[in-house]
Amino acid sequence: MMDTESRKLVVDDTEYMTEIPEESVRPYQGLPDPSEVRAFIPGTIVEVRVGEGDMVEEGQVLLLLDAMKMYNEICSRIRGRVSGVMVSENDTVVKDQLLVTLRRG
Image (cartoon, rainbow, N blue to C red; front, side):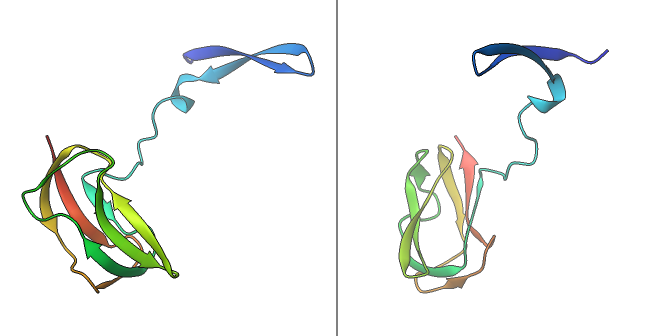
């Protein structure tokens, strides 16, 4: 038997009980590694705001990326130390290119 979780669903004032298999509510395993900051779109690096060895907070802006005439703030998803900066200002980057690496902590 599969482990399930029951949830109530209401549609037009009618209640329904649903059973959701455990494997469908587990966290998604294919999420990108938060210690690798990658370009989500091709563009040009406008500004690099961190250097190797810097401590950064979750949500801190690491880089500015100009893509399609819009500046995009590339932020850290974790608190940690910058272990590498792979780009410089005016570099052209492609989608999914590694920009910065971080070490948790």
